[in-house]
Image (tube, rainbow over all chains, first blue to last red; front, side, top):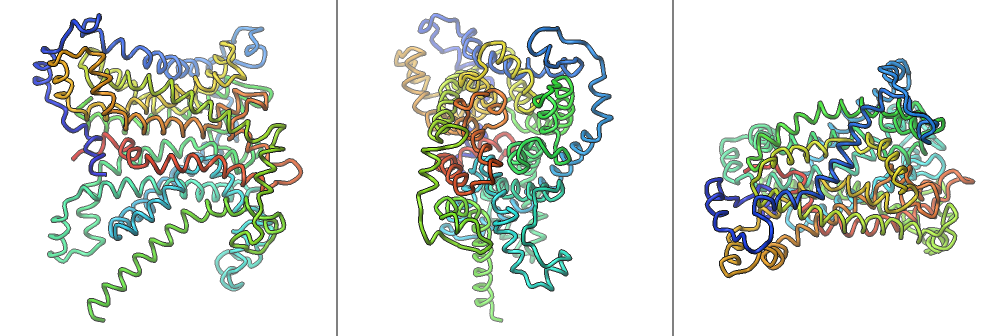
Length: 338
Length: 283
C-alpha cells in the first residue's frame, strides 16, 4: 500500500523549471508533429467522449427540464414545446417529489454516517491485528464490496424474505420477552419487510452499509499505515488513552482522507439506484422512491414525461454539485499537479 | 489481573471482533452461494439450514438451459461480457492517450481539462439518462450492444484518465530521455519504455471499467427492449414476480454474475483504493 500511495501522490514529478529545461532536449524530428501539438492530438478522443457523452447531455437535461417532452416529441412528430418553469412548479406541488427528496437526503445522511463510523472502526481494528489476521479479514470484507449492486439487492431481499428469510428466523430466536421489550412483538413469521417504505429503507441502509464499509476501512487502514509510529509511542508515554489518541493524533492527520471518503460516500449514496430497484421490484411503490428512481419513473414509465423527469434530474444534480464543490476545492487545494 | 494476562485477553477480544466483522461481510455472500446449491425444500423453509445437505446442481442447470425471459443465462452473461470488454478496449486506449497527455506534457488548457474531468465525475449518470436515451435512439443504436458500450465508455472514462495519469506520472522521465539520447523515436520510446511500465496501472484501470460496465443497470434497462439483448443485471429482474420467486434460480444466476467480479476485484483492490483516494492523500 505504501508503494501505491507514493504513486497516488504523483511522487517524483520534477519541478516546473526543470521540466522546461528537459523538454528542450526532446527530439522533434522523430514524429511528424510539432511537440506543442502532441498533447492536443492525444486528448482528442477523450475530449470528444467527455464532451459528447457527459457535458453536452448535461446541458440538454437542463434545456429539457424547461420543455414538454412526451411521446409525440420523442417520436419526432412534434417539436419540443417550451414551458418555462412549469415542470419545476408541477413537481414541487407533487407529494411524491417531497417524499423522494426526504428519502434521498435521510438515506444519504444516515448511511454516510454509519458507513464512515463502521468503516473507520474496522480500519483501526485492522491496523492492530496481526499481519495474517488482517489479510484474512481484508479478503473477506473486500468480497462484500465486490458484489455487484444488483446482486447485493438480490441477496438482501432474500435475507429479508417474509416467508423463508433468515432474518425473520433469527428474530424469532430471540426470547419472547426480549423481542417484546425491544420491538413490541414476539412473532416475526411472515413479516413483510419490503412492503412498507420505512422498512424498505431500513433494509437498503443495511445493504449499502454492508457493501460500502470495506472501502472506507481499507482506505483508513492505508492512511494509518502512513502515520509514524513515534507519534503513538509518544502519546502512550504521555499516558494518553486509545480514544484520546484517536482524536488528537489519528483524526487530525487523516483529515484529508476523511474529507474525500465523506464526499465520495455522499456521491455514491445520494443516487443509489440498483439496490433500491431490486428491493422494491422496479418503480412501483411510489412512497419508497428516491430522486433517481422518481426521475426514472417519470421519464420511462408510460406515459413518458421526459421534461419533468429532466427537472427532477436537475434538482438531484444541483444538490450533488453543491456538496461536491467542496470536494473539488479539496482536490485543487491538495494536488499541486493540477 | 496481571498485565500479561490482560494483554492476552485484549488480543482475544480483538481477534473475536475481527472475526465478527469477517462473518458480517462474508455471510450474505456465502448464503447466496449456499442457496444456489440447495434443494427447494431446504430453501423454502422457516428453519435454518446452514449448508446444503443434499447438494444439487439443478438450479444452475435450469438457469443455463431454460434461463429467464425466454433466453438462457449464457446469453445474458455473453451480452454482459461483450459490453464490458468493448468498454474496456475502447476506454483503455482513450484513457492511456489522455493520461499521457496530462501527465507528460504542459500545455494550455491542461488545468481546464483536469477540472472538466473532475466535474464530469460529479455528474450523476442518472441525470444523463434522458438525453442519452434520445441520442442513442437518434443514432440508430437503440437495442444494440454497441449503444450500451458507447454509454459505458462515457461513464468510465473520466475516472479512468484520472486514475491512469498518476501511474504515468510515476514513471521517471529520465528513462524516456535515456531512450531519446540513444536515438529512439517518440513512438518507440512510448511502446518500449513507457507502456511496459504503465501496464500494471492500465490493467487496474481496465478492470475498474470492466466491473462498472458489468454491473451497470439503469442504462441497460432503457437502451435494450428486446430480451435477447439484456445484460445480466436486467435479466435478474425477471426472476421476480412470475409465479412466486424462484430463489434457487436467482441465487444461482447472481452467483454466476458475482464470481468473475469478485476475482477481478481481489486482484486490483489495492490499486483501486489508492486511485480513489488519490489527490487527497498528501504526505
